[in-house]
Length: 555
Image 1 (cartoon, helix red, strand yellow):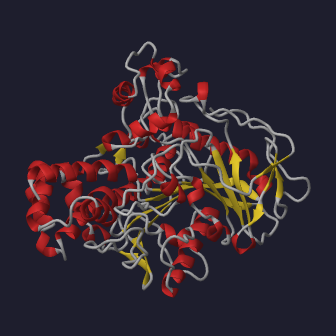
Image 2 (tube, rainbow, N blue to C red):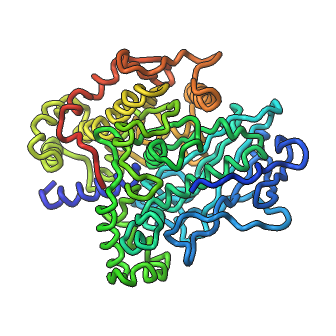
Image 3 (cartoon, rainbow, N blue to C red):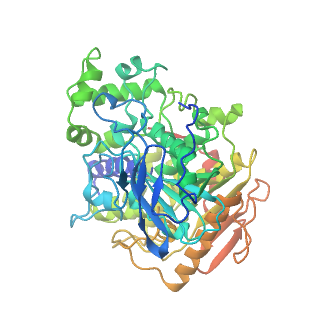
């Protein structure tokens, strides 16, 4: 691979892969159903009106496309979410709403999507997208049930709540809520003109505000669906995990959730995807505004609100412009999460946190094998490491020699897995464990059903591979009997954690609490479920803790 081609490939790998990774008021009266509090009826009363759901998988109920905020269109584009309008009669809630605006992720050579969700195939141009979905179990005890609110991944640029089927977790006794939130520039653009019209003189983080609006909806309404507003777990994967990390550090999220689940995404530890400062986010916003024809700061706010949504997502959907995420400054995230932890100003709730063993193999398969011209050679692997790590490259190559791995592709995958996922997840557990209960895991099924073909890179336990074990997916290869047993174990763990803050219970192997001294992480694999003390050595975490290359990623 020639040097120019190498640089082009690296730029594409890092830009698009990173994109994939990744007003409290007095509450109104809690919504309730006419008689029994929503446990059995398909017609439920929310604080904005009645909704009719349907019988879902396994006999539970599912309510889809329920509005939790007003359409963020026109003058409400790039403003904090407002309450949804009330409606008369019974609103049909038997089909999902459209995803928030995004490009389709149909990047494969055959035009297929690179992720299994429907939103990744279709994309969307619909700004009226602030809706959520609710799953309840078929059988209830009559007592309020614990609630899981799920934030989808997709680099804060792709995905939808409707991509996730909550039925398997609901069958374990949960009420499951999956959420849409504004994405890309529409969800995370900061700009001086937008800051000037804001009460806190800051902008950005509209996607985080949407997520908190959904949590407030849950607080006001989930009792009508049989849920317990005092046992809410906020969780997510990849970007959804990074956002969950941000909410733990958010003063406006206080009291909105009581436990947290972070799957493959950190905003704090070395190697994490850190929020931008407001100044940096506004500089990026200035460049974006100019790219869509709004360079004049005095008219930028009105100009941006007049830009058609198709132009906004086209401008925000390619190259480095597609990297969007939270910034500090707005009151939803006034301080960097690591500073909030250092000052003790966090929502320190019990946390279940972890990663997959082979996170980056998916990205190597996609952006090196399928879209980058073929597998790495020993020479191009070394050149890629030198290009990426500079003065530290020799130490990286000594720690990850190509000869120690089945292929250069797998060597490169191990480097990025350890630096950007595994060791940050462990560092989060070490930090969180100083203030709260933590249960740490590593998903390690080497035969997890792949999302994309992998001609030169066996994907193993790749990024997002654990999702098929928690949320049923018809678009991937069916799980084997052993994998189905692992799925049942995992959904039981997740449900018990949501219920009590502790995943342990009858019928599943003991999962020890994580402590820095013992440093034990629960392995989740078809042939083994139990703790290991070898995680740090397996992923060379001592090397990354000492390496300047492990500095936080600031977009």
